[in-house]
Image 1 (cartoon, protein in one colour):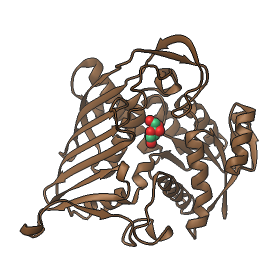
Image 2: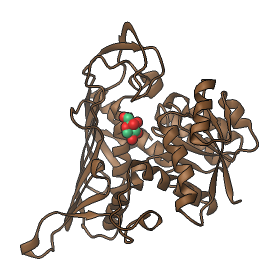
Image 3: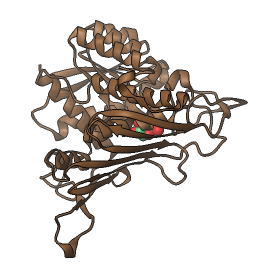
Length: 387
Ligand code: SOE
């Protein structure tokens, strides 16, 4: 097989990011299966047709069941809101299609385990969209940790800070409704930090958290608008049913202590997805707003040059860089998706599961739920209580 025929559900923010990644992949990477943009799917016929044309898909569908049933599709890409992930993924697995699903994997741990089991039983490949792992600077952090270059890890401090709903008049979009989104900042942003921590540090052992919904009612939105398009407002107000911010402390199985913060109320922070890791031989710092940089500190540097230094992860020594531009020519948000799709295509070619898989999606969900439980029960919760 030289091509992987893709059918994608969703055509807004993530649909655009994934379409771009599929198109860029064969242009920049050689010796990789080529994604064929077979069909794009969405409920609104006009909207999906417009997206089909702009993003370069061959055909459009308005019913995901029709898409999943098509025999000219190898991979189903779920870029739609979280409440539909499970049903589509299970149907895709039943029809023998590989699945690439956006995060958070599902609305609950039980649902994500069902999805994982369905995909495993069908013997298809399954991947969850934790794209930030694929920034070259994050890959460098992973390499330094794996090689033991910062020694034993004592601390993980992770944050995902945004500010797009600080305005109390921002409408009640789907991301603020529990039945569609599952949770608020916790599942949308905290999920990325949890995945980053699992990737770099290892498994969580126990957690304790707190959360708040600062603005409890918002104007109703007349559309299914996302982040950028606010849609019309009806004049009526409705309850916000998700958290605006969730913070938690964690102990990892390897002994690392962690603190994690996810909020949409950090005025001035548009997309601060950052971490700091402190080990016995040094420290690492990353901030997505400076996506190409990793700050590194090594305890054994000579006394007179001790301190953090900035490594620009765009040289041939760094992951993916050779595929793109000469050293120092910056990469951005969209490249993380191209690298993610690269991993997916490599996994299909090599007949192995991609990383991160639904297994990682479910593991992340277990941590999210353990934090929720700890908030409800006001106590430390071990992850083993849930799985
Ligand atoms: C919105 O908060 C959002 O787009 C998330 O849904 C994404 O997963 C994250 O990457 C950026 O912020």
